Length: 267
Image 1: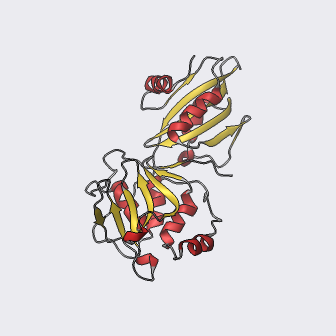
Image 2 (image 1 turned 30 degrees about the horizontal axis):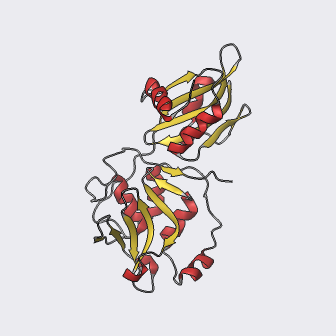
Image 3 (image 1 turned 90 degrees about the horizontal axis):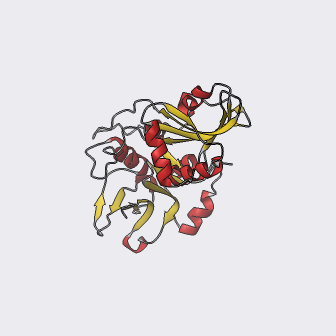
């Protein structure tokens, strides 16, 4: 079997949106399939290695992918994608022959609290964001040297942004909103620092006014050069665009269940 992204699309279409799995031809390179899936879904997490399942794997971490194989899984890597888990690797078939496999399962996360215009100021928006994305992994960059970054930039940075980088690391929300690992300064002459962006060339910035970065409002520099201000900070902004269908930059119309796509595996 020649592996291409078209081949992967065909295989996933055969499995459909519900739970399903298939054993693949023995001459297929399972690492090549993993690489193709990683190129579209980001860095995978390992559920099973050398026949031993990660003891922390539960429903929130893709355990449903292991159900079809019982104790016959040899190596399974997994990705979250919207309301679905996708997994690949190898497992022993009914004749105890190790073969490549592809498996999908439905993914559910706790129903997030709704976003309303008059939110309580005491809301922890990072905790809300973790809940919305169903995030269960350890902090990806807990040891960022923010003092060095802030010294280089010549300014302190908002706390919620630093928590986002520490928690999620390098990647994107819904494979769309890319989180900068430190702010870009391309628009500094306009008083803006860029903390995220999208494939549509919208830049998510702060209006860096005042001595308290935790009060900097988000400004979106659109692809056509217009600045659209919002009266809240970065983590709150991400929560809104993920689940508020009325937000002008909403992503809620594309996915009912949200996730963060990692670009690099954690150590």
